[in-house]
Image (spheres, rainbow, N blue to C red):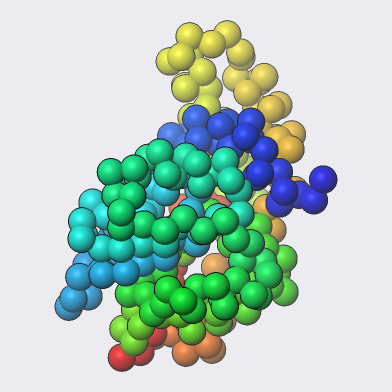
Length: 242
């Protein structure tokens, strides 16, 4: 199976969602995304959540801008089903698109919906081959309104082995805590073995955040920065000039 196809399997999706609480400072990362969007002088009227998963980023935007309209795009139908369920109270304001943005043709489908005040993505673009990542950032830029923001909450390449080890330790400890809280009987070592040998691990194609921010600057984004970083996680992005 192609490694990124693993995310179309309901069992993998369910496991990821059940363990998301183990992600270091996950709520804070979303909070930083929202803080960036709030610097806009106008409310977010239309947004795109690219690789939306269960729609958690879209939910955060709708919670602050309840009149906004959004497009939630993912190539995993199980993920889109979760997003539809989680955001059913906003169903009339949302479009759900099953698409693979690894194919450059995705941008043609989104041109019927653009321009967007905000395009966000969470733990998704790193699954794309390195040669595809920069073109995706260019395509995102083309879909933004002047003054619109792209914000990526992302899994990145760490600068040291210690950061990798600390990240793995944090995730394993978090998953072990969830196991105990749910009355499970697996040991920490068993949790560690499962995590370190997980079938989706090879789908992670990580790049330094510095490289990706450099690309954003070259493409023409402004206010480009890494606004948060811990271990192998970062919140970075930039704005299309007015």
